[in-house]
Amino acid sequence: MQSEKHVLVIFPHPDDEAFSSSGTIKLFTESGVPVTYLCGTLGQMGRNLGNPLFANRETLPEVRKKELIDACNVMGIQDLRMLGLHDKTLEFEDEQYLADIIEKVLHEIEPSLILTFYPKHGVHPDHDAMSNAAAIAVARLPKETRPTIYGKAILKNSVDLIGKPDIVIDIKTVAEDKLKAIKAHTSQTSGWVELMEQQLKESSPEIEDWLYRETFWTYHV
Ligand SMILES: [Zn+2]
Image (cartoon, rainbow, N blue to C red):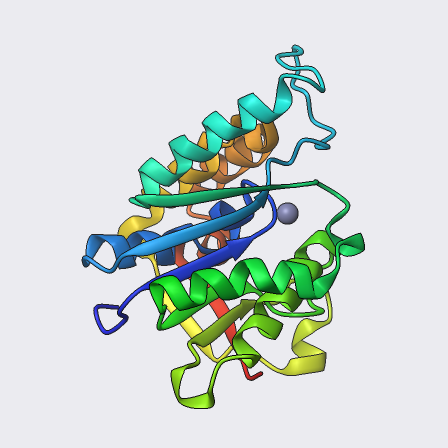
């Protein structure tokens, strides 16, 4: 993990990073690798306003902002950048415009590795818009300076389409931190957390995929 110079995390919604890669991120920050997180939106269109209700449409962005900061603290991310884009409308943004934003950061921090969704394999249109923009931005760089991209593919048939993930990261030592990062996004993840805690207690096999390893597919631009 130490071999990376700087890791750039790119996701559209607060909580995408927690589910997909918080264990990997924690391993990087623990070994002293700087991590920058570009979070596209504040998930302000999220359906979940809590039960009992803890937020409304006006207050939800503030709630999710705080949750995101808490999650970043758990993961050890010191450079969180909230882009303030509009939730659920990223697919309608000009892809070159989104790529411009990312490209600027690429020049600034010169990451050696990017964590994002695997383009076209993110299920949600916001996920695909963000990873597509990341791929465009990377493709603009001269070949020898391009960072590696680890893409998270989450289509039901991703394995049929692009094969098994080539990157499997053992996150067992930081499993608790991953759970905490997910937990930090309380407004969106409370049901999940209970399920995971239960599975953890019962050492059920599903927990392997949730909390003991994270998988990615290297994406070639
Ligand atoms: Zn998302």
